[in-house]
Image 1: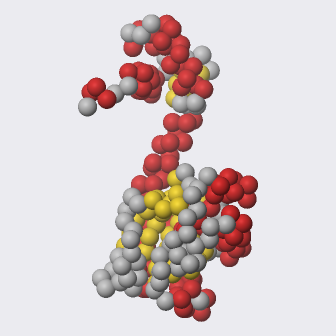
Image 2: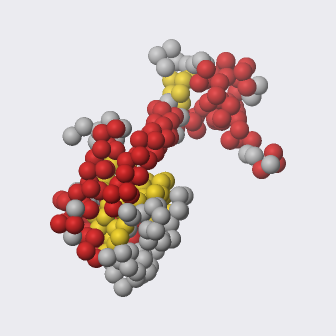
Length: 250
């Protein structure tokens, strides 16, 4: 695999690793890496431009906020799965149905957790699978964090194919659904991704009061979506409890 690596990327990572230990001046970076002045200058300029490094008060290079941001996202995901798993299992036991948790990534929902009890309905989903945001309750929940113009941009760059008779393939229709999510605090999937599959999704917030994930539970009967079924309350309460455990306060 060595011949598959990019030398420029390796050099940039070397710079990051060096200054993560101790801030360095350009001259010190040249000495530590063995690269010439021109190469170091280009590497530093690129990394600074992207926010991965910055200059401290002494004029030396140190890690930038972009590194902190990426680290926080990764740590949040680890913490999120740890805190959410027992609550999702409890939700799955109460409903005797499949429960999912997903995150947003470039116009798609990425499944990061799935709890499936014995004898529950079968679904074409698994951890790591991606589906377009417009197709599911979790997708609508995750879209609700964006303003209308950003949602339009996301959807217009998506191939909105019709998977069932109920699939929304119109940007305006999906936007209307998202507005309902913002109002009610939950979303529904009314056979929009798979026939005879009905889902209820709710948002998970982090300590910044930002939506970082969505959870959902699934049924194969339209009555599943009724307010008086109690399922909606269960899903919302579970999402709220996960949010609290990772630092969210209303």
